Image 1 (cartoon, rainbow, N blue to C red):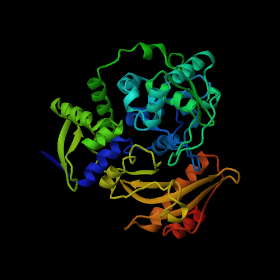
Image 2: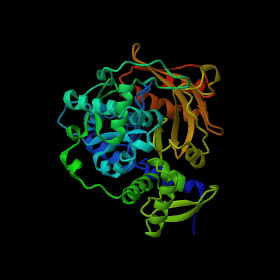
Image 3: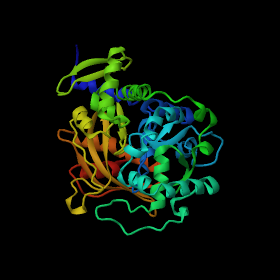
Image 4: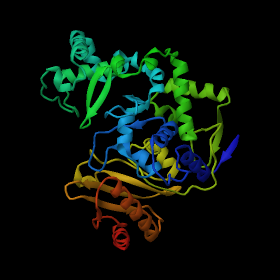
Length: 405
């Protein structure tokens, strides 16, 4: 069995995610964005907008400044010359995915009655007539917002994070089952419509693969996007049931597409994608969304980078260690710092609420590179300045670097 050093495995993973290549120097167009999607397979969506919507950030991390409306047009969220190439579905979490992936997720759509979360399953079981009524409403009047169903919001139940009314829950059941999808988003709110009115006819007509065949292809996408990974890493990429993940990985090993390897310091068996690049050096520089596919599986992030990362959005402010919306900073092949960022759109300023270096990091070097990346990011977001608070051990050096720049 081949043995890899931890550093070699880290470089393989970064190359698989597109960080071993320089960013484009000229104009970034749809071809560049498609290439990122080909590499990573999907972009996770998230509603938090204190800094920037999360699905825009992985593309920026790999390409640098690009027109965000490009991704909007590819997603069908704005009118334009580009035809829709992405759709929304539950993949890792709520995600944007290439249209070609839709048939690979039909097995999940078929399990809505058993695999969707509790409130959705319960409504489908207890009020199937409401599901049918909402589907008819979408057919007659779509695209619809959840508020357009006419169902009033009930009092929240103890412990519930989302106070969804039954109309929204019905739409989410239909979304999970594939009957409806997101026609577009306005202010990030989904407009639901029948899938046959949103997805191209060629996608709808594509044959439905057997569950095992579809899952095997999803693991292939994950393996290409991760380079080297454990079986739980691979299964988590599209949130496969663990028994299915084990079976599909074993099948790809048998087929020679995944090679068992031993990575120094990893406790679990690892698997190397047969066509994975093995760069000797990675010279990346990027701010990573908390939902970037490089780091979204926190156990893998810690294993790859020695970087313990927990998002603290739902942690009470007094108990937060690093801040509300904290992005790891990738420099070279290491995660060297983390910054809590906020876009103050009214003032036209990117605010660094806190800046923290990882142990052993060269504060001056990291601050200089981070300052350059922050200024690049601010310009991309249409913000005129970057201001850093004196919070965190890296803050003094970062403030000095921003002044010097």
